[in-house]
Length: 387
Image (cartoon, rainbow, N blue to C red; front, side, top):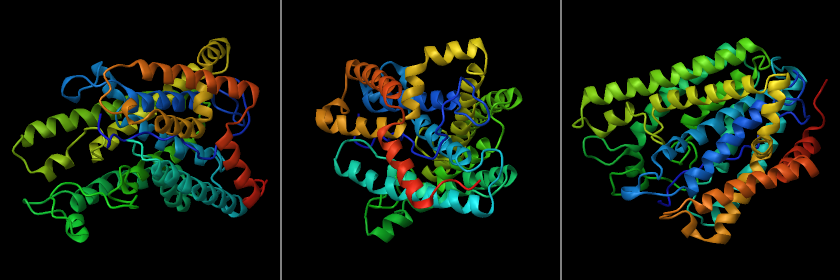
């Protein structure tokens, strides 16, 4: 494994504090969303700690499904949480909108230094929390928009953002990229500017904002309705198949001799941050959310699923804490648990211990420690949500 392997975040966006049975009522906690976050956590562990086979391929090969999709799922869920914390289906206005923006600002102000601290540990993990803080700031003007405008903004971002990023960071006609020239770097490859989370970071905000806006639109829907859940599953699966199929056909059409810029624009590869990858990742995230919401609908089957997957839901409910502890654990254990891993033993131990620990914490204590800090700080600064 290389030191540039990106990671998915544990997400610290606002979310409902109350617990509810599986599926939840419209005022309760949606267990299906926690399960989706928990699945993204498993993907995060796989991305960091999964074994590499010959030539750097995943071992087993299907582990590749975790690459890129965990980060995008977390980003989309961040948007969902922003919507749930600011009115759910009801678009906030007036004092409620001001309160939502202030709490979002407080959370961003906490996530940024926390991300800097985790980055300073020097682990071979691309920490996403600074990018998360920037995404929260960028999302603030969109909190008062309705679903149609949110989806329009997401579509524009999914097209313009990757194109702008490619034009700035990709070499053109053999000449260094614009970012390389501005930074005084002679290399023609990708240049990552320190502190830049907008364009050259591992999680460029000009691209990842699309996931957050889609998540906001999803969170403004009635997620307890069967029609909504089936729609997310069906539309998400169709969008993912369409995007990655189109990428494959387009790359075959332009051929291997096409310029790096052209191949980048049509790419569906993980972490390329191209439009078709964004669409494919968005479709996958929507399908995952829809599936878990369906599986945990109110009733006996939903309660059984929620109980059986309790540790996964617990990890998803305190994902910021799990993410942070995971980075610290990698720092303590050393880079060798990420670099050139040939066994999945450490991965298995991480999954078992973190899921068990999260389940016990939720049972005995409740809200995760860092989630408690975010909630307390936001409440202290912004006060209770206006009625």
